[in-house]
Amino acid sequence: MICIRLQRLGKKKQPVYRLIVSDKHKDTQAKSLEILGSYNPTTTPKQIELNRERIEYWLSVGAQPSATVNNLLVKEGITKAKKAKSVFISQKRAKKIEAKKTTAAAA
Image (cartoon, rainbow, N blue to C red; front, side, top):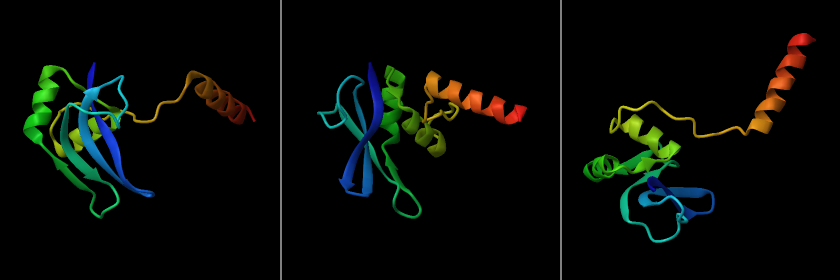
């Protein structure tokens, strides 16, 4: 499956990300199919450069954006989808949190 995701560049503690199109099973540092833009979260305001036409093309072909990329595309107005949760909680961790809430509510 082809996906649009971020590739980390930059120095230590100064990340710069590149939006790439690659196979989901490949490493982000491997050769990508195409570079679609860049994202610098350390500047104020955050600097986002996107190739809108190519992103729309890859989405029409069936490429799936990662959760973080989806949120960036929604923020920039490229897609109309809802923002996705970029942090997932495992079932084991969710049970621990639920148990903690019930004990706190009972006390």
